[in-house]
Length: 306
Ligand SMILES: Cc1ncc(C[n+]2csc(CCOP(=O)(O)OP(=O)(O)O)c2C)c(N)n1
Ligand SMILES: [Mg+2]
Image 1 (cartoon, rainbow, N blue to C red):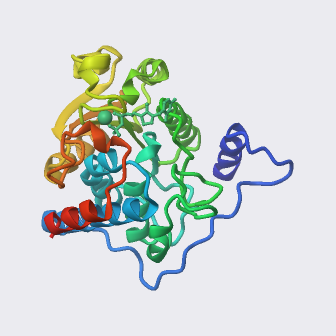
Image 2 (spheres, rainbow, N blue to C red):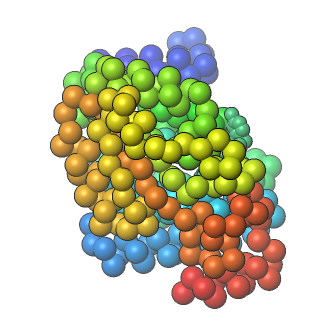
């Protein structure tokens, strides 16, 4: 029954090949099972390492999105290393929790964390955005089959997540689905259609985390199309809504636990973050939405991330 649901989702994904299931997910060989941790110091240390890797890989690519990758580090690290029920040695486990980085341009944070978990090779991270690399500019399951979804066209991730969450319910699976969206992305109409649907249908195995870093591609969100009062809007759509400091691992852990304990409603976590977090000249600087650091800027950034 669970396999059939996976197949239904696959057909919906548009990659419909008759008489074939989803492509096999190659298990990247690792020697030991992934080490999960709830320990604050360990998670913070991983976050720092992830930030360094993000800077290095975007510098090597000479293009990419540092700001929104850095703002989401604690969110993605806390999910993968602590909250998500996953097994990188068995990436197709039907009851695994699902993760969708709807703001797919922040792929470097996802690739780095997945590589740290053992889903994919660390030594290829610096091939980001190269022709044929498994680390495409936006997450693509055709290149990296351990992903739960291809993303990059903003606005779509919650809708995809709703499908996965409802499929889990049909299968009586404990799997939960987590979607990370951007605040600029929240200006997309599809976000609110999905919010309205999930709130009405009580999709309580779905969590949407907004990386609320206050900046989108063209500048500050408030100057382009303000979202406030953002939490009230999610509440009005019948979502259990929590606001946290998105760089505070402990607050994130508590919010994810509160979401898991919430029945009858999906949960929206508004994570207040700083775009470019961790690198002084990138923080709150709209320029670093989609511009790679120069070699010199890379060196300066890495000196700050020790
Ligand atoms: C449908 C769609 N329109 C436009 C873009 C181009 N785009 C890429 S990132 C971005 C801004 C996103 O801002 P936000 O969601 O706040 O991301 P973050 O600040 O976390 O980087 C835009 C408009 C896109 N990827 N998809
Ligand atoms: Mg933003």
